[in-house]
Length: 358
Image (cartoon, rainbow, N blue to C red; front, top):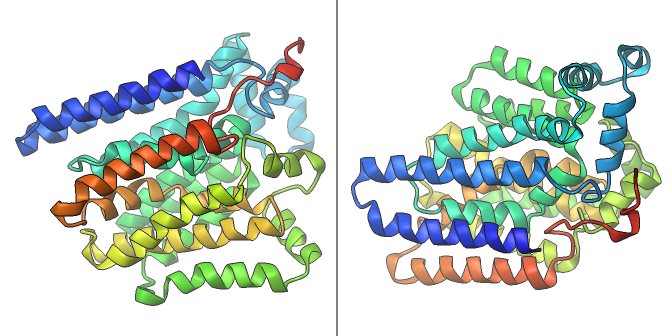
């Protein structure tokens, strides 16, 4: 827990210093990029250099690293993951280096996305609060192969925003080579041309309604079809601290969505870009609501909810000045209280019951 106290102390203190010392727009932009780099880099170190007993599947990944050979390609549905493991294995026998390699694409993608859309923003701190309270950070520790694929989907998002479908498709294919579920990213490209306006939030409620009406077995077949095996290990994702979407956690995600919906017309983004971000927010919230029936759907939602790390700070930046400071300070404070005292699993810690793992 101490490492998280240090991390949040740093990002909060550095954010306050940055606000006081970067009045000029150009200096502010450079300061934001430097601040963003260190926030992401330190997070990368926390993921890659974590204890072997932190993360429900960490030991499984290390076992893959120790045992995989090219022969595993024969029965693998995700060959790029096997090739990556074998490539790192040929370079080093250090599992710490391997864990770092599994986090590099994901962290680089977060940096690139946030740098593009938030380099002139004063709300980068809020992005990292969102990253933790949405349990996306915890997910990156528990399910590294999918977050590797998520990194490629984020790169695909950048290409979708520019309308470059060939590069977009390439990133999706690369992601699917690490985790089949990355194929879900294909819907991002058409979302850029879909303007749902005030009806967008109905998607979230409609998906929640479907989860209550459709048979559970049918929904489990859907998540299996898109690359999520339905076994006890994945049910553990949905119930263990690494990914637990408790009622309190879901409320923490819905409050910012309401802000996004109310302030959507004030968010300063180009038309296609705003469509992408808003549609992802609505779909992500809807999919997260479906965990009440099938726990694995929270894993599906991250392909869309990840972009809230940009949209929520932009929504906060549209608030009137007389309430902006109070609202942002309250969000950060409530987020920290949730992370350290309420939200089980948002800050992954070593599992003492597995400390004897060799």
